[in-house]
Length: 168
Image (cartoon, rainbow, N blue to C red; front, side, top):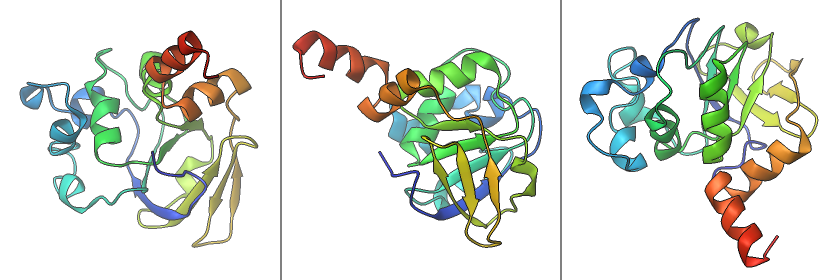
């Protein structure tokens, strides 16, 4: 998993981006993150899948991840190497699916101040999103410690496996 504390490019999207725009249903023939990543944002920003680099961020407006509850949308983003998502608000099930898959997410009402291509980083402990291009800092809602632990472990499956084996 990429480090969300390291500055990297922001890919900015608008409001009400649903799961079918993130991972178009016609391409969901697998649950393999690498295969799903090849079609991430296919209709909205076709260049995303081929140009996104490991460790970059997705930034969005209101209601990111609305629509179906399928996990393929956040899986496509993890497969693409996205380090985290900063959004003004998330659809609840999408937010939880990201946490369950170990993909860092922060709710940041000021996400719309971030421009496409800005270098940003996110601190899950403090909830600070830093824009290294403009020098601005935005206050997001930090993840509670138990959700941070899930993300740090790589998601719910890895967390549960570690707990059952006594590793954590």
